[in-house]
Amino acid sequence: MERKIIAITRGDGVGPEVVNEGLKILKIIAEFTDFSFEFRDAPAGGEVYKKYGNNLPDKSFDIIKGADALLFGAVGLPDLAPGVAETAILRIRQELDLYINLRPVKLYEPLRDRCPLKDEFIGDGIDITFVRENTEGLYANIGDITEDRAENLMVYTRKGCERIIRYAYEFAKKMGHSKVTSVDKANILKPSQLWRKIFHEIGENYPNLQKEDFYIDSYCQWLIRAPYKFQTVVTGNMFGDIISDEGAFLIGSLGMASSGNISPGKVSMYEPIHGSAPDISGKGIANPIGAILSVKLMKQESFQSSDIAKEIELSVEETLEEGRTIDLKNPEIETLTTKEMGNLIAEKLKLRLKR
Ligand code: NAD
Ligand code: IPM
Ligand code: MN
Image 1 (tube, rainbow, N blue to C red):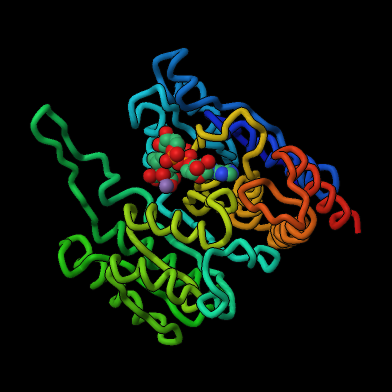
Image 2: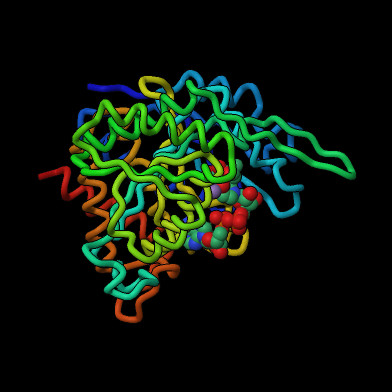
């Protein structure tokens, strides 16, 4: 029996709605496999800030630090100033040194009808993993703001570049990819020049992998022009934030995209890449798949359980033929609420794990 402690941060807006569905999946895993879980609530975000004046109270952070993994919903409230809730995420990433942000973007066959691209641009399909640097760059929190001037410093260190780039090459090798793509802005930005140099230095250790560089502006058009070309894509913090939302729309909805904020061998955080979605929160219509696939990533990356991860993914794919939340609307397929979607996926998983 493998016992794991999982910290749960529901957060704001649709965060709690989608985390509840992720929890259903973990409960099914506990019922039908050798895993058992202890869930510990670690409240954070805007609602918590309003109560305690702190978006990540010490008690919550201690629970997170003492867990094997963290399942995180989303934070942010429209009636708070930008950043007041969101910095909780950055503190977790910085203080736990979660330097890898793994963001897979895969177009499931049943969702071809929801991909905004014509068939000729989809080609053989879309299956990209963005490897986003998660602790440096513009997110290093070095900056200042006055009434007349505001600045953030974009800092990349050799150590910071080396570890994320090495991880990306290793990831590509593990996945059997033939190529690693690096996205930067080396024609203008000094940190990108260091990044690009290190990308090629480290690449020398991987003679069997092709290497390619793009400038971020050009990459944004290639991502919609020929997404089938890309496999592992490594990039800095700010560019990774932006292109992962672009990628998410290619697979049908922002609600489909999952992520792992990872420090290998240490407590890591798994979360959908979307935010608290105030425009739809409280209605019970949010797509829970980003959160459910984040549980899949947790099994795969933190608990070395690729078999169960695969079963979760297959359950999601199967369900998309039968029912969908409204963001993935298809008139021939039943429209489901968040809970119904989660229940259906959980049912499929149950059947698969029982076999
Ligand atoms: P958002 O990701 O919350 O929403 C963007 C659009 O996508 C909205 O139209 C929303 O309805 C839709 N969407 C998002 N998740 C969905 C889901 N699961 N199912 C269906 N549709 C979904 O981005 P935003 O509106 O720019 O930001 C709202 C708040 O969330 C802000 O406070 C922002 O800072 C915060 N934010 C938090 C995170 C996080 O917690 N990881 C990430 C991004 C944004
Ligand atoms: C994300 C979010 C966060 C980021 C914000 C909310 C801090 O947009 O996880 O993609 O910018 O990294
Ligand atoms: Mn983002």
